[in-house]
Length: 354
Image (cartoon, rainbow, N blue to C red; front, side, top):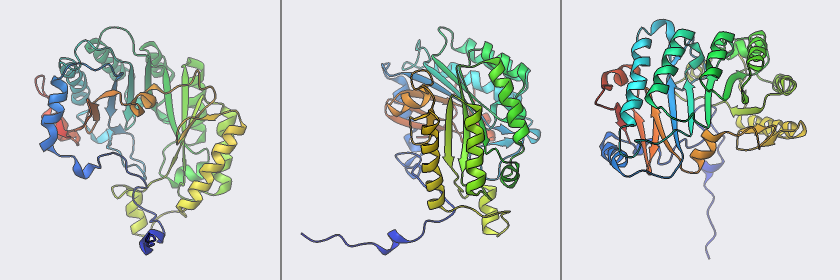
């Protein structure tokens, strides 16, 4: 039997920039508008027994972070916010009229962004009310809402709780002001502490805090110091992402122009810090439940949105660039704010590629 031949390229150093995993299968290069009829056929087919979920994309931020690669727009320069919020329940209503979805109750809902908590309380109330009206019936088993520290207020939190939000997720990235400033974050540690105190006082079934390992200027001391401060806060769930620098991020441009404000940890360093972080969280009573999450109590602190999708649940994504999965077919909506609004109509879904 012949022996395998080593490929020299396989041992080249990993690039600092670019993605480090295949984010979808089939890869996006194989998605096209030509495949939309297959998604339409899935919508026209009989109903499935799979759990059914909804993703709601709110693509607005106070300011885009240097490392962010998600679709988002600065709210102060986006006059279309109200038009966008009106299009979301219209889209959901049209989906729920399709044979594959008519009469099906939602098992889980996820509001992501962008920064959903950036919306004013009045806009949030209008959006949540219209979505609830479009999908009457029993409340979902889980509703997750993403928020950012500076846009958290007690009035918004109480509204979210009253509308049935069960799981609140806040991106804090690190608890070190120097690292937050180098990463282009607007919030500081004091903002995190204020927001977290309000979140806990209002009360949600599960509170998740996000960290990022590999931030600009990060050291062992800054990362593990942040981790210790987070453990002392005792969130129900901790999520840790490794920093990526895809080509559509401001940080990628800074790397290319050698204008990054601090050193960037390499992949080996990030992985070592992540491994040590899981060990420390385990010692603090957390149990790792996925490649990037750990919880204090697996029986009480679940994440249905993640678990159900891992097992093939049906998912409808509404909003610009949102992803759906139905009957074995993947679909992505029109991928920009302008194209989404142009394609949205009471009798037409804003379909993009599948």
